[in-house]
Length: 471
Image (cartoon, rainbow, N blue to C red; front, side, top):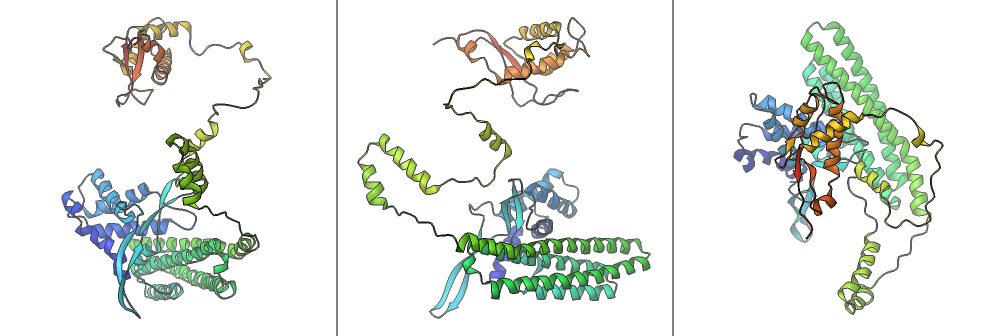
């Protein structure tokens, strides 16, 4: 029942009402879902994840193969819908749930089993990305609760037998499944390391961790030897095969085996960190005195005193208590612009006396040609002064600035000065002039795209307004 529960969300895609309502009846959604799971599984390891848009573009290629002649927007819409269903964006915790029955000493009872297929995690730069869960890999390789090492050995044996009979296409699929088993092995080791980080007391090094490490080392040694043998067999077949189609299949198989070697290198790196990490967690968790936490009686120490205060007076103590209980909360995904903005924000009340900065050079005494001449400034001022209440587009002003005349022309550079002045009008709105009722020119971005040979962005609408006047 647990196996069927994992498969059900994938099969339910083809029976969805949204599929019929959007006219996607001829797409095979379950196969697109398996393509997404396959892609995410093979593109990720313990240190990397794959962006959702990358998955959408890959699945859209499969959608185009299923239904040719449709638009690229439809293929991407289908792929995005399938990917979001696998993430289960309709649920806040992104988890699928299914009731599973169990026979116990007290009779028959049902328990809720929850699982995920594609999981959202922050990648190495803090952006949202996807990884495939154990449930997803289980669906992909049809191996519910099968020993990983035994499954890997069986896959290698099948691959060797197929290579001996020169059945290249079936051998590629067997190598593909063997690679998936290597990913499962790495995830199993990674899960044990994470459990050790959470509670080292719950890990038995002598009977559990050491056996796992020894088993993983034996796995790497045996698989590396088997893959070396397979690679030699592939090279022999390449030398003896003249069929161009089979040669391409053999080259793909050789690349697949090479990628297996790379995944084994990642697994070896993980195994080398298990021992030092276990000792480090011992030092951090076992040999450090436990923290002493003071318990707070919410009713007597918080609720009753607050009820005696006014509404304004009780906000301060409640906010202080909430901050102390919740602690600093790190956002799930941190973006670099927000981080820089927080670092460069100036406090409203800066303590201490400001000290003037001594520069080695006096920049005011440096003689250099200005970027724009006075004629160019006069020309731009004249263009802006001619703007009326009906408004004029930036593209129209650029065309006027490139007409031959005093300070203007195709190569004069006045158009660049005009764009700089327009950006200033958009960013710095003359609020004081508008409030006093004085006439001023403002730039408005209404979403029109600028179509110009030199500049891009928005085609601002510049309008002259007389302001609202003093109230």
